[in-house]
Structure formats: structure tokens, C-alpha cells
Amino acid sequence: MSSENSTPTPSQTPSEPASTPSPTPEAATENRQLETKQPKGLYWLFGAEAWERFSYYGMRAILVLYLVNQLEYERQNALALYGVYTGLVYLTPLIGGYLSDRFLGARKAVIIGGCTMALGELLLAIPSLLYPALALLILGNGFFKPNISNIVGGLYHENDPRRDGGFTIFYMGINLGAFFSPLVCGTLGQSFGWGWGFVAAGIGMIIGQIIFNLGQSRFNGAGMPPNFKGTVEEAHLHTKDYLEVAGWIGGIIVLTFLSHGLWQQAGQALFDSPLPLAVLFAVLITLGLAAYAKKRDAQTKGETDSVQESQPLTIEEIHRLAVIVILAFFVTFFWMGFEQAGGTMTLFAEQQTQREYFLNGELFTIPASWFQSINPFVICTFAPLFSILWLKWDNSKYAISVPAKMGIGMIILGLGFIVMFIGSNLAADGAKVSPMWLVSVYFLHTMGELCLSPVGLSMVSKLSPQRFMSLMMGFWFLSSAAANYCAGILEHTLSRFHIDMWFFLICSSLGAGVLVILLTPLLKKWMHGKA
Image (cartoon, rainbow, N blue to C red; front, side):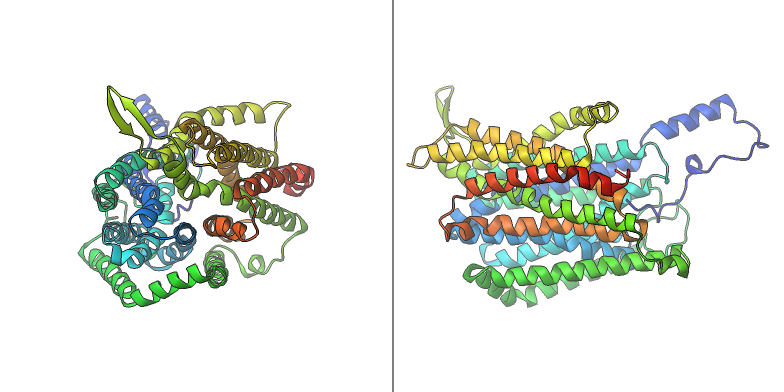
């Protein structure tokens, strides 16, 4: 993550020349504590992110159920809209990151995004404002998502040993919010009315914004606008900054509601045919990559001379970029299957899973949205174990390369779909199956995610030439955008050819995993020892 806006603190200052007197024992102890204790700002950002993820995953857990049960959308239309929404959520951060780097700074962008998303969540409670509400959520996420991570990175100096631990803590905040949100928002939405679930998500976003604003004095100067020249102590937003933020939020709201009819027409076009939306996605992806390329070019001009700027790619760099492109292609198949969690698997939980049980003589129904809490729970439980496993495994003679780990993750995903295929066949005649079928699927899918997602992000950062770092990271996330869109239209598209979706996902997941493992020797060679 970029830390270009951060100002070094005393603990970040490079070591002094040998002639400088040695620090006293008390000062040395204090310096060691500064290097081992996480910055205070991290815990405020942890809280802000946990509540933002509570908001996002709470809404995500009930969106398809709301569309089908309350708004009476056809199943295929609800899944298609869900796919477009989650796809655009991965696409707009390219634009939000660009605006932040060039004009706003991460702090302003986080506030703009958070307030816009809070309003979008609250408006979802009004059925007639579905499309403007989703638009506000998509745009707000574009401002929020990339920039809060940017601020986390800015808490540390370049070689700070606390950085990895800090991002691990931050990652736990994501999953903490994701775990509780389906339980809270799902229960409120399905038991007391869908609007209450969305209102709860909106309140979560508001709480996150309050925490973020209260913690600004502890951000070590990170996230300020590009033209900020002050000290760490002066690094906070003033009244004029909040007026600018209000102007951006107002502009986004006005633009969204002025284009209300356009959003409705786009939704109808989606239901008539997914092809126009596929073309739109291709155009937006191209624009997103162009924005990231321009951003990186601007950074390069400030950091290198003209000879370095015009330097052509070496054969080694071409090989490394090719590895990223090849793996991004296969990873699309992984996320296309994995993202069935919020769509078809949630509908399976509601319609084909036995959820009614007697507890203390009273009938209790498990909300279908609760199953989406399994993934973050398993991540919080097993992520530390995977971290230890990879560390020990990578330092042994049985070390596994990054492509092989990702291939294993895809195969585990396919195993989950085998379980799903069997369970869906058992429920084909109207019978309802045990919830353990879904629990097993979510568990296997999360195991696959832990094999693929963290090592994939690390791989991109290691293989990308410095001048293409942002571009390739954006490209990696854009594969997720395309995968989410495909996940939404997959069931209806396959039904036209009378292909069972679960069987298709078994083949696509296992096939992609086996191919990646077969390509591993070549990909490992092209990595040139960089990952």
C-alpha cells in the first residue's frame, strides 16, 4: 500500500551516523516499544472498517432475498442485478483511487464514500428508490474501499516490521464485520421487515464514519490531500475540507437522482439481455485500466528520469506480467463460483434447506442469511493457521509455489461444488436437505479462498515491475469484477442450454485448478524467483 502521504515520526527516522551518542537505556526501550506496538490509528481504522464491512455484507446477505420476496423479481433477474451490483463494487475503486491520489486525498475520499454509502443503505428501505440506492452504494464504495487501506499503509514507514501485522489486524476487522452483519441485518430483515435490515446496515456505516472522524488525529499524517505540506500535528481536515466533502456528496446525490430514469432503463435492459451490460462492463474495465495507467505514469514522472520512463520491458518483466495475466484469467473462474454465495446459494438456503427446528418446545427458523456468516467465521478461525502452515511449508523441501497453491484452492472450490451438486439433487423433488450440506460447502469454499486469495495479492505485488504496480493490481481486481458479473448471469445463461449450473461449476473449478497445476513448472520459470 502507498505510504507517500505519511510523514515520518521519530521512530521512523533512519539510523544516525556512528558519531552520534548512543541512546540512553530508557530511550532505547521506548524506541523498541514504538517498533513493536501498533500505531494507535490502526485500531480506529480497524473499527471504521469493521462497521463498513458490517454495512456492506449485511446488505449483501439480504439483497437477493429482498428482490425475490419483497419486490417479486424473477429469480434470474434478481441474480443478474446482484451480479451487476457486486461487479461494479469491484470496478469503481479504480476511479475512487484515482480521484483520491490526484485531488482529494484518502481522508476526504473515505468520508465521501462512507456518507454516500450510508445514504444508499437507508434508501434501500424504500422500494421505489432501489436503483438510485444501489448507485449510491456502488459510487460510495469506489471512494471508500481503496482509500482506507491506503491510510493503513500510511501509518508505517517503508521498512516498518509492524506493517504485515498491522494489515493482519485490519483484515480481521473486515471479517469481524462480515461475521456479525448477516446475523443482525438478516434477522431484522427477515423477521421484522426488509427495511429494518437495510436501516441497520446504514446505521453501521454511520457508526464507522464517526469512528473514522474521531481517530483522525492518530493517523500519523496519512491520507491528506496531495498538496498538503504541513506537519503530522497539522494533518487534520478543516471546515473548508468538510465543505468540499459536502459538495462532492451533494453532487453525487444530485447526479444519481437526475439519472433515476437512466438507472431504471439500464435495469430493464439487463433483464432483456445481458449483452449490453457485458459491453458496458468491457468499456468500464478499459477506462479503469486507462485511469490506473495514467496514475502510474504520473507517479513515474515524479520519481524517475526520462530514460527510465521510456525504458522498454525486458524479457523477464514480460514473463512476470504474463504470469499475472494467465493467473488472473483462471482466478476469474474461482470467483465466478465463489460469489454464488450471495445469490444462488442464499436462495438454496431459503427454499431447499431445512431451517425449522424446535428449541425448548418452540419452533425456531434459521434465517437464510445466517449461512453467509460461515465464511468470515472460518477465515477468522483458520487464517492464522494457514499463515503458520505456509511459513513452515515454504521453508521446507516440500515448498509449494504460488501457482500450485492457487490451483489447489480452485480444486477445493470444485470439491465444494460436488457437495452442492449432491445436495441439490437430493432437494430436486421438493424435499429440503440438512443445513450441513451448505455448511460443508461454505467451509470448503473458504478453505479454497485461503489458499488462493492472500497469496494471489502477494504474488501481484512481487511480480509487477514497479512502474506497472498499480496497473496490474487494478487488473487483478478487475478480474473479480468480471467474475461477479458472470456469477449473476450464469444460472440463467446455462439454463438456456439445459446445463446444470452446479455440474458446470464442478468442471470449471476443477478444470481451472488442474490446468494451473499443469502450467506451474512454466509459470514458476517465468516468475524468475520473484514469488
